[in-house]
Amino acid sequence: PPPLLHPRLLALCFALADKACMREYDIKHNNHQTTRVSSNHESLISNHESLISNHESLISNHESLISNHESLISNHESLISNHESLISNHESLISNHESLISNHESLISNHESLISNHESLISNHESLISNHVTVSLAHVWEHNAEPCCPAPLGRGVVCGEGRPSQG
Image (cartoon, rainbow, N blue to C red; front, top):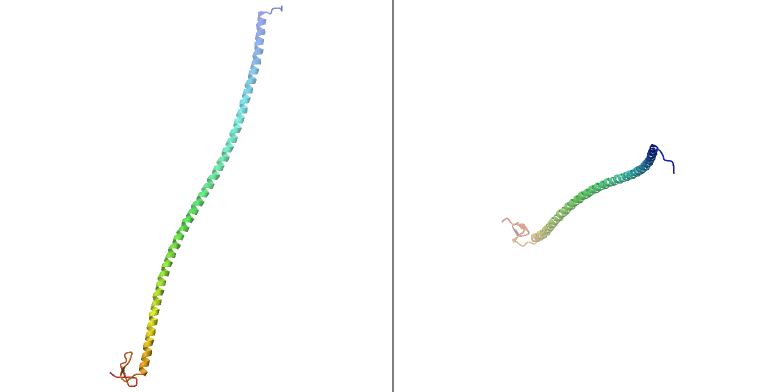
């Protein structure tokens, strides 16, 4: 059998063995902790990179929203302008329609005046013809007068050779 060690020497051996064992445990534990911390750090880096990517996407989306909003404002202003033009054109159309009605009424009035003037012209023409006939007859009566026959145009009574009488 091996020689027996002194109890103190034996205790020292156990203590040294314990210390070496504890040191190995600490190293393994520290390596595990380091590995775990390293893994957590890599996860944090990955999460941080994802956050940066999401932030850049949000910025891009925000810029797109601003651009779309500006386009909507521009389209709205164009619609307002087109609506105002439509209202103006509609008012012009109403005004032109009213002018057309007024011109049509003036045309009717002028046509009625033309008809009236034409009727007056016909009446004057008939009067002219009647006067011409009366003057012609008077001229014939003057030259072919019988003694003491009535003379036209209020010239008294014609006696003899076409001379008016005194009474």
